[in-house]
Image 1 (cartoon, protein in one colour):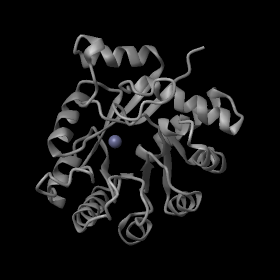
Image 2: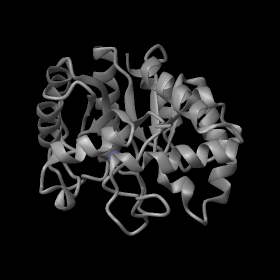
Image 3: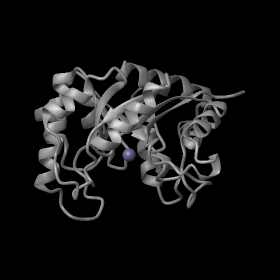
Image 4: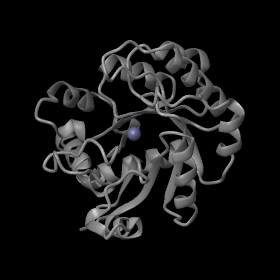
Length: 256
Ligand SMILES: [Zn+2]
């Protein structure tokens, strides 16, 4: 039986289309056949956000999150709150982000990231939409001060501690897990998955990055979200069907 899943975080304008005759439509069709019923495509800057809105306008099953990725530090300008609101009122836009503090490359979160993060949170409040943010430490305080608990958001690609997950859940956030939970060395993250209630969990690919086992080293794509779903089911000792139903319901609760 085909299990229906939602990829709650992917970058449709960055996917490798070489096995699909360079056609995004062909890739999307293949994903749908594999059971993917919705995609949240996330912009990494304003140009990318604009591109994704265009793609989503032609596809009922694609939703959009707009923003400037915290690792785009070289990208000169932080969009203004007004820029974000203007673009964010488009009916296909369901969330603002990804945004947040990200010290992936080891440096401390910069003032640039903080300013950008707060700008995105303010725009999200104005738009009354949830935020997508990259999960890193040091951010709960900013979320406390600037995020709106009525609309909440999602900590995507979660790799932090259980404690941080619960702090975020208290602020009405969902926790989204990527293919990282399938990695051999991710034992403590799997322990976190086990302890977070299923009704706060989303699943994602973050494609084209972070391909799950057994596709590591290959280009990731939305249909591989099934590997994340299987791993959640395994960890929690529940059926794949249960993971499918609850995570899809969570997605709808958050974004619609
Ligand atoms: Zn991403």
